[in-house]
Amino acid sequence: MLRLRKTITAIGLASGLMISMSYAPQLFAQTYPNDSGCKKIENPTVEQKGWCVAIDRRKGNCLACHTIMVDPWPEGFPPGGNVAPALVSMKDRFPDPAKLRAQIYDSTAMNPNTRMPPFGKHKMLTDEQIDEIVAFLMTI
Ligand code: HEC
Image (tube, rainbow, N blue to C red; front, side, top):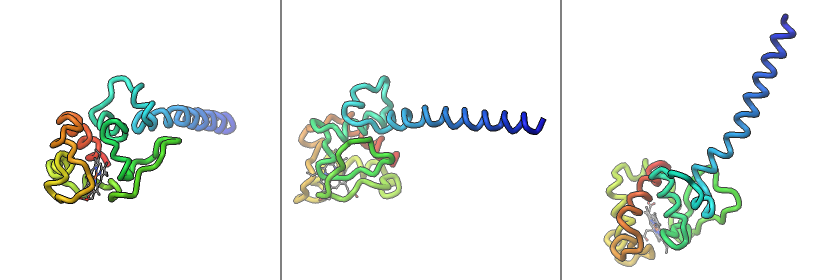
């Protein structure tokens, strides 16, 4: 009887492990896909859209200057730049999302000599894309 119970527990643990091993990487990959992964997400959330706009080299290209602290980093994806401070702990450092939005919309308002492009003012990104980036950044 005890032996049987042990066997059942072992099978239970093993199948639980197998389920989590086969599902977990997919879930993560969906959260932070690389650029080609971004094209494949069906019904992306606003936050996923924001991540994808941020890393897209024809759109935000934030990685040209910033590291973005997401975990796990998409496999085989080049790291961000060290020109600008790492985008980390955003929801703690920007309790007011409007301030974060303002930085991305027009970085020159904060610092006229900044190297960061004023994405909204110069219409490099749409208002909607900026909102999506803000929604994403508020998750990290
Ligand atoms: C060409 C380089 C460059 C690019 C591209 C760039 N930034 Fe920046 N960013 C900077 C620099 C430099 C600063 C530091 C503040 C300053 O110089 O005014 C900064 C500051 C920031 C800050 C405030 C600093 C902080 O406390 O974290 C945020 C938020 C930010 N950038 C977000 C973004 C996002 C989002 C993108 C992409 C849509 C982006 N940046 C693209 C250069 C860049």
